[in-house]
Image (tube, rainbow, N blue to C red; front, side, top):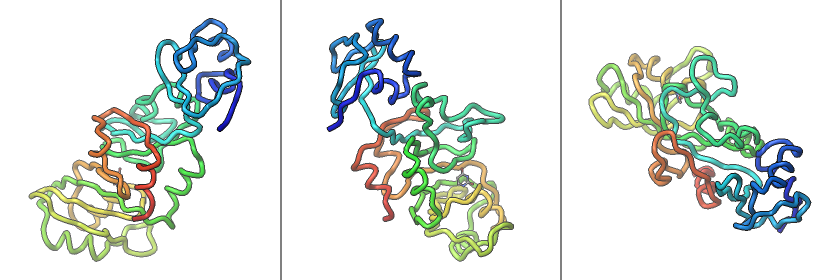
Length: 238
Ligand code: URA
């Protein structure tokens, strides 16, 4: 249980500066659990709170844990160079909250991307010590062969890595389709591993992190959803 003044609550949820939030409240643009509240000093219980701002409902979240179904053509960087940022697919107030991607997907990779404003969570999820399996579907330029699969399972040496990197599992899913599970999150890892094994990745999709599958979330490309405790628990090491 936690009680805060309404202007602080609004600011914490990313709706703008304290001054701007006070003006929103005084203008009657904010409702608490369905009732307009125009006193910014009103003390409000945050547990189970639903804010309505400009007629849109926003559940109060102390921290944001989000899954995005990333489409092609978006960059995970905060300052993207060639494509729009994935942040532009989220409500504007999440940017104010400094939500960041947890790890990165390339601009041309699709699928499950976690995002959060919880630094400790981002750090823990991105730690190399954490062996959370990530499942990718790769499309290859050259047909998939048994030796390719065996090589990816045995480990391939990448230029800037001290030791070979191996897939946890690697299964052929079609003539040009491979499902590959990795525990590390190295830069362009799937593409570089395929290149090092003599093939080339032409499309890449991430369908699962730990026990959390994109399918289970029911979000279409470009859509996002909040993650609850049960879904976050699935991200622990399996
Ligand atoms: N491996 C890659 O090569 N690219 C990604 O986006 C993710 C994993």
